[in-house]
Length: 280
Image 1 (cartoon, rainbow, N blue to C red):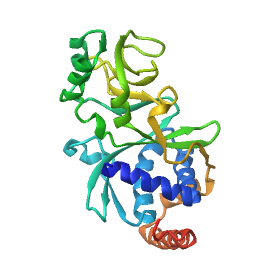
Image 2: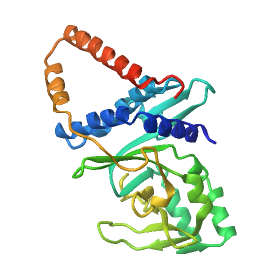
Image 3: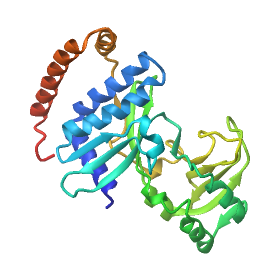
């Protein structure tokens, strides 16, 4: 079991035993959409990092931050450290609607051009082995992506982990497909032995932006290759008090912030005691 998979298992156990903790955090995260459509994504990184630090007693998390982007070795948003094993691993956190999900940006534009060299239909053990051995695909099994998939109309969220190992083991055919509905560029789609969708590599040319290239999957079409940390959809509710808190905090002084922070820390400690987290 990889360090990230072990973390996912522990997170799933925590959520199962104390669903109120994650429901409360997700409610606060998606309340941020009342402030701005994209605000929740950046704040989700901070929130999940703090969730780990507060409620997963043998894990520690660091929010990497956007200003460190150029120094990143991976596409991480947070770094997680297992305090017991001392394993340290990057995690890319996504807050996406239910549907297409980007797993990797392929910043060197290597995946799609390499597949093109192998033809429009790629099958057979030898040909597939060439793909997994190629530099751009060697990290395929190490995709530490933690997606918060949300359905805003129904106010529900599903935290999913893509099982990259199972995906790689089950791919039997890769096919080039032309541009289609809502898509300007062609893709290479990966299918398993049943002909079911697994994932896809999007066009990586000079005219493609970051959302038109790289490795993608689909949370509905590729559902067999996801593990739900939340054991399916969980509902959340908007916390309008949080919006008021933010608006007041932005015009308050650091003295007021310090006093509010002390109260928030006390509230978190009450949650920990109520959940009896030791040993989770």
